[in-house]
Image 1 (cartoon, rainbow, N blue to C red):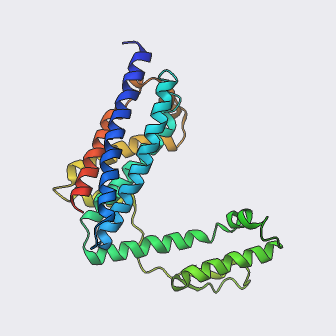
Image 2 (cartoon, rainbow, N blue to C red; image 1 turned 180 degrees about the vertical axis):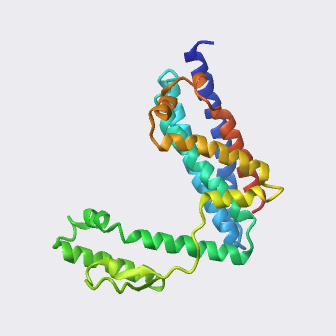
Image 3 (cartoon, helix red, strand yellow; image 1 turned 45 degrees about the horizontal axis):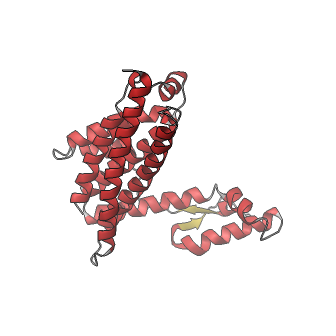
Length: 253
């Protein structure tokens, strides 16, 4: 089979798969919106389902463009990165599905604490956004950003004794109550669960492959450019594995 023909077949298969998944997930999301009794565990899982659906829709858009361009593999890189993100969210959704209510609350608290901690390094982003509409010197803009954090996340903050400049948001630090859990730890938990062991292993294998799309090397860069028949992965199987994981998540909600 000519490379161009193979590429077109692969892109068309990816398009059909992602379209089917997006349709199903969009329906499940709309149905869930009508449910009155929403538990925290299910809300987190559905948030991850929405992220997966959104990213798969982006895969669908890119796939359509690749087909319109004659099956070019130029867009393999962003598609692979999007699939990797979906795999990450699917693994996390499966991990949450096996947690108790208390464990879900602790995980949610930990994730929020990590989000707030990340705000301290984003002052320059805020300044760039408001500099034109709220002109002021750098200290004043920094002070406004600090107040934004205080207004929205006061309960997560405690004084940082090493900092004294009240305009600098680093006068605060996050009072962390939970312990960060890595994706590796989530996978290890799935591998200890007889029901989720197989799907967890497959999802993580594809996650590790597509991680090479994010972490640059000459070898991985080559994989993102070659025709579908010349690389080391089946995009169709990766999406089928993702679909299988999503089905388990939605069945538990």
